[in-house]
Length: 198
Image (cartoon, rainbow, N blue to C red; front, side, top):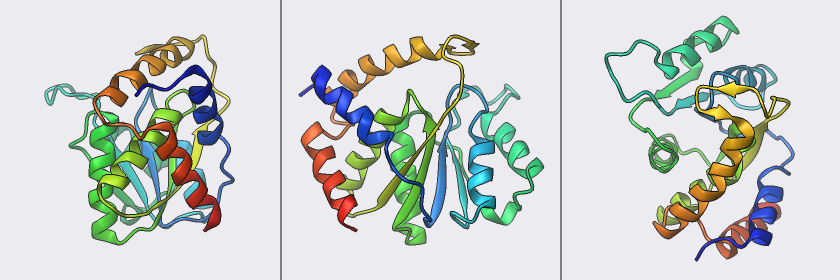
């Protein structure tokens, strides 16, 4: 069942309204360029979590040298983040795979909470995708949303302007909801109610 316009608006509100708090790990999702490593570094330096997970090797061509994971690692290290605090996940190439790989890491490391750092336009789908995978794993993780704010909407990136990417996100939510990769709106609400009680 696809999200209605009203449900999509509410999903945006839910995904962008969290108050930042300490967690077991900081996870940032690769997106349109390298605007998130600095956000993850700032959260780490301010003591919000002892580990940073870098996830999502969007570049599928192993011959090319412009690896986003490697570029992000350089920025984190330049920001003073020790290598011992960084975990890299290179096998995922989309949000669903990132959720699967993160849940694998969470189970291995016994993480119960995570700060999700992602682009503002991408955040609603990230949130619903991670909730879905968490439900499939039959576990509970406290996801704290931390969207990257203050970036221009009409400046071109490698993938296009962010305003165009937001429009694309609406289509992607419909597509991946049909595939069963995204939590339904009632499932998101149920999770949100649980999260606000802990």
